[in-house]
Length: 134
Image (tube, rainbow, N blue to C red; front, top):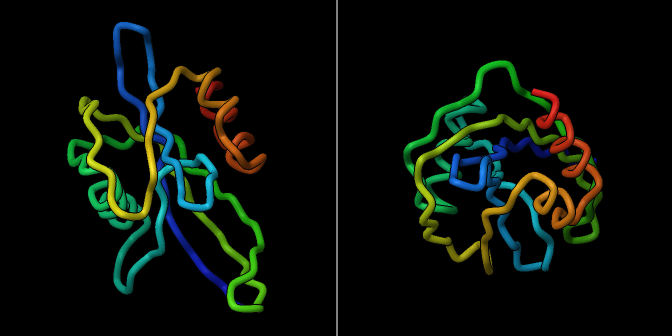
């Protein structure tokens, strides 16, 4: 079985409506957080900053201390089972404009409850629920 490691972030911004969370729509149709594969020599946080910049154009990211969590799952690629591990951080931004990369179809900023309802995968929902307790 092949192993794959990625890093990602739950990104939020403060607005007049409270905290708004960023979700991206992936080509397969699911809604999820920013994430991507770790490149050689990168730390988890370096990967996150690069992926956020590449996927959203956002550059003013501040990590929220005290939150780091891991999601694990399996998927198939070219007939092979891949075990994927994604380390997630919580971060905030003051930017509301998103410039999507070719890797995504759409984005949205949502309140906690709306974002929780829109997330496609149970693993992402479980991760997201842990943030509410912070």
